[in-house]
Image (cartoon, rainbow, N blue to C red; front, side):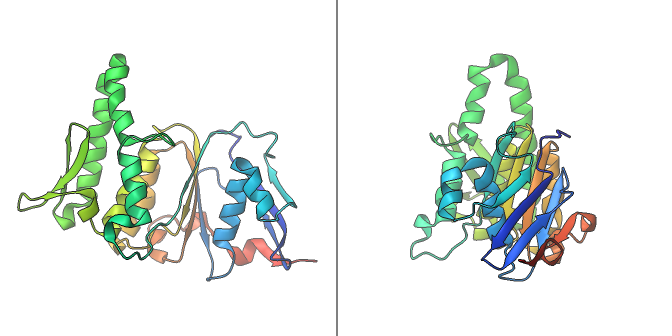
Length: 258
């Protein structure tokens, strides 16, 4: 595991009343647990901004932040923040979750897409068999996860659709909130191509069936065994099957400011 992954993180004066001192951060999986309002998401936002978005860090008014490695020492592996976008909207086709999913599936200019990854089979013919095999593995994984809903992934031309058990076509917009959320998470991690990365996920269990929650961390590590994960959650189902030693309680790393 690359020694340049985040090893410790300190924030002084969280909300002007708390200090964060997080030592001995795991190089693979970190599951952050705490009650609502304990600062889990705030801490994740600060960590991401510290390494990736200095302007946002200043807007947050967090200047007394220290980490190992420091931002200046950071030989940065790719950093990804998968935020929870399952929020109510008036129109189903305008939801932030669907927009982010469609952007991740189809060609876009901001970040890698599944479409652009598939096009690598043409652009890099020497990698054709490798990329084809990776896509097949992803399809099989998604089909396995979607088995209870009776849907299978169909890739044709530049499109991604799903076929129901009765043979009907299901477009991305027709998927349930949980299916969209799960598919987005899997694709964002898959598109890193198992390269070293730091991946933040804020309450990914929202909208996910308990069976998916129980499998998610195992699946994420399978998709990218070279990533360092930071996951916030309220659900014991996320870590109840073999991940207990990776749980970090906010109360253990936060203390009253001096």
